[in-house]
Amino acid sequence: MLTSGGDCQALNAAMRGVVKGLSENDKDLEVYGFYDGYKGLIYGNYRLLSSKDFSGILTVGGTILGSSRQPFKQMRIPDENGLDKVEAMKETYYKLNLDCLVILGGNGTQKTANLLREEGLNVIHLPKTIDNDIYGTDVTFGFQSAINVACNAIDCIHTTAASHNRVFIVEVMGHKVGWLTLYAGVASGADIILLPEIPYDIDKVIEAIDKRHQAGKGFTILAVAEGAISKEDAALSKKEWKKKRENSPYPSVSYEIAKLIGDRTGSEARVTVPGHTQRGGSPCPYDRVLCTRLGSAAAQAILEKDYGYMIAMIDGQTKRVPLEDVAGKLKMVDPDCQMIQEAKRIGISFGD
Ligand code: F6P
Image (cartoon, rainbow, N blue to C red; front, side, top):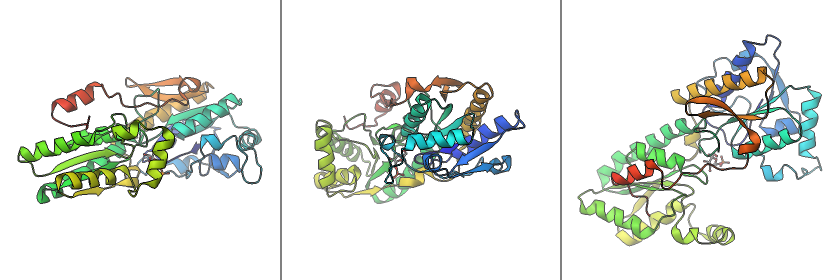
């Protein structure tokens, strides 16, 4: 078992589900934990775990195995000592005579899991990420817990923004997608929500702020995805946009928007970045249930020796989804989805 990529609140809860589901039904079970994601599998850094290791961790955030980012793009490139990483992982797998690798992680992790499957290893993947961008599952674990943190941050900003009649931007994580910003923004009553999937027009953003002021509302809250992009920037090539960001004096898009709002409205906009707090703390009850179910369903697949799947949650049911059908695909917010139409109907601006 290994946990790879950015951590989240519910990794331990998911591992506990898998191990409990297996150990209740297979008394000879042995579980090896690989440390720091694929690194542990590549360099043979692992430990035989006991069921005690998985006791009392349902509510504990982070991961007892540690994690690291091992980009998929670099998996086929030998390390600094010339080691072939894929071959090294296979060697560890065969040396330990493993039945299956249980791999918990996001998109990049899933691509490597699929690569290992193609290389002939038995794998089961569990969809982890606060970004909720894994294709083929309705929800990923970590997402709901992160919504709670981001929503709480915006709630706290709300009261101080109202007291001081200020414009506030809360920058929400989510990498290239807007799920977390959309849900945290709607849940906390944000006035303007900017998502990567809906490139914003700064004139429309200013218009929305002015409209609130004219209606006698002195403050405005913007929930801005870290991957939000203006209409002009969205028209640039990837290369041009990257260069523009590298040369930008602003640490992120939120600060750039704040500067433009300040220049155009005359009132300073403040930026708050909850950052990695969104991945920290205890998993929320929804994630604890989700992970217990996904973990138990993963155990069932392993007991049946049915490998090569992501264990997904679809319409409230756990499902085995073939890895080759989903690896490398991104689940983005549909700009025309019902939730966005409903949010617009109650006056939330998406800057478009
Ligand atoms: O994928 C989870 C995530 O938290 C993203 O929302 C964010 O863009 C990224 O990881 C941050 O990565 P790191 O922890 O490596 O800075």
